[in-house]
Length: 279
Image (tube, rainbow, N blue to C red; front, top):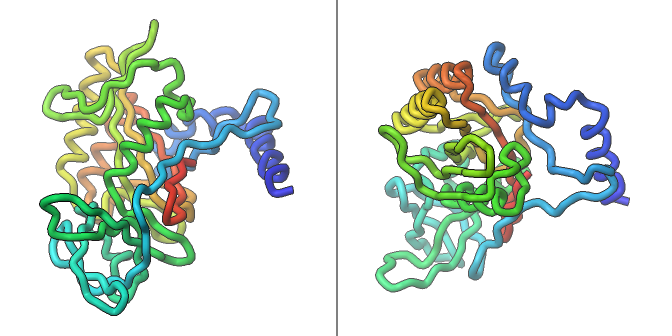
């Protein structure tokens, strides 16, 4: 019954809501009012009777839980594991202050590699009834898999995916190419911050983020298609917007770029502790 109910909900959104809500056209309205970008739905078949399995990443290696104690540097923290305090690698340079509070329950991944000082990566944090993925390396990989699988309808038709492509003063995550399609520069951003159901980026000032938006706008004038995709690494957010209070420059730059034609998308990604699932 659950699958049938979900299929029915997908059918409702696919056929009864205006198509602009599914295909991202609502972004233009949100740029003016900036109430926020509504999240995308998983794709469905033309008949609306079945659902394609979404793209996901499986966490490799053993996972276990610990208790967060103290952040040491941008990329390291103290965590209590089995009654002992150990240093762990934190694969996220963001502040994460709303997540990494003393006593927070975290998900750790065991990593054994030559030259490493630590045995564990902090990959998730329990927060407000959900598990938030905090590994900022994963969104790029997740989007890459989704592009290969055809799970991002906004980029349908692009068959060649070139990672890490430089344009102007910036390096972008992907250059997409397809038959009779404009080459598309795509930048992926990791987002974990949420307040009152609103996901926000960034959680620390980002000159790099503003530079990406400026260069994407320039690429449009050179004949490229340009887009930025925010992957919100939690499933309890409903709307995305830039964090103007923290970094007003980024918010202004993103809006100007969107007004010029840069496409802005936001997808949620649910995290189970073992698997990160897009949409």
